[in-house]
Structures are given as structure tokens and as C-alpha cells.
Image 1 (tube, one colour):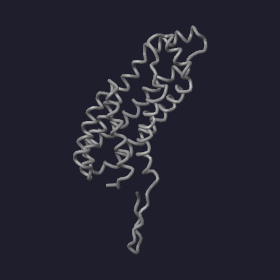
Image 2 (image 1 turned 90 degrees about the vertical axis):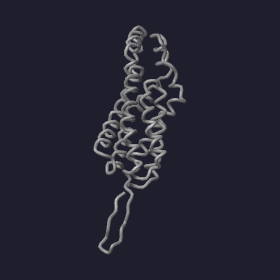
Image 3 (image 1 turned 90 degrees about the horizontal axis):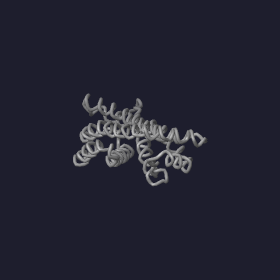
Image 4 (image 1 turned 120 degrees about the horizontal axis):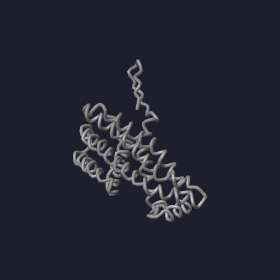
Length: 217
């Protein structure tokens, strides 16, 4: 929001369209994940090379869609983190502001990379059966890297969520809601076990709505 003061003492307030990008980015990220969970793409890829090849061939369209979502999530998560930092930088301490920015940046990168690592090999699976089985066997050897990156995204989310929740209380957020945010941030550390993902998903959704309807401090 920008405010222009005229010589006559009249103030004109304009809402910048860029103010909508952070909350829309956060809501888009959460909505994309929910769609992924309820889609056929959530099926297990399997534990053998043959099962991986079968999954890749039967989910071609979904694999491409998830890969595109993973790439797009860099912009969605980055826009959300940047907007959150901009909204709170005047009330957060230097340490809180730094943790928020570092956590938000690392979260966006780790989250995107885990989906790219999981999906890119499946999208580019060779048509030759022998080569496909060979690449699928290699895929089973490094797909765990994606889980570690997802776990890293949870740790980064905690670095973003906890200081942001504490700082938001200083600008009028109810204390109970701020402490719930702290709890969600701590729970985000459990993303490596998958369940922690729902904590930071809920927090991002609520924070996006607050940024969307709330006034600038």
C-alpha cells in the first residue's frame, strides 16, 4: 500500500498490486500440495525397478504436472517469504528478520528441489525397456535424497515460522494465535516424517489470509 499526500493536506492511499503476490503465492503453494495429495500422483512409485517403470508410464501427465509445480513453487514460496519479511521487518529484531529471510529462502529451494529430484527422472524415462529398468534401479538409489530435502524444507520452515509468529504478535496478532504459530513451527521439524508438513501448510495458509485481509503495520 502506498500513500501520497497532496499539498492541500489530502491523503490518497493506493493498494499496490504487488501486495497481493505474497499471500497468493502462499495460498497457491498450499492449494497445489492439496491437489497433489488427492490426485493419482500420490500413488507409491514402488520398491522395484519394474514398479517404478510401470508408475512412470501410467502417470506421465501427472508426473509432468508435479514437475512443473515443483519448478513453479520456487516463485510461490519465494514470493510468500519475501512478502512476509517485508511486512514484519519493521517490528522483528535483527535476528528474527535474518532467520525469517534465511528460512524462507531455504524452504523455497529445498521444497522445489525435492519434487524436481523425484519427478524429473520419471518424466525422462527411456522408452527402451532395458534402459528404463536400469535408470529405474538407479532412481531407487537416490530418491531418498528427495526425502532429506523435504526434511530440510521442514527445518527451514521452522526457521521462518517461529520468528515470524513472535514478531507478528507485536503488531496486533492475538497472543494465542502467535503461540500456536510457534507450536506449528516446532512441529514443522517433523516434516522428514511427512506429518510435520501439515503444520507448516496450515501456518502458511493462515499467514497468507492474514496478509491478504490485514493492514500493513
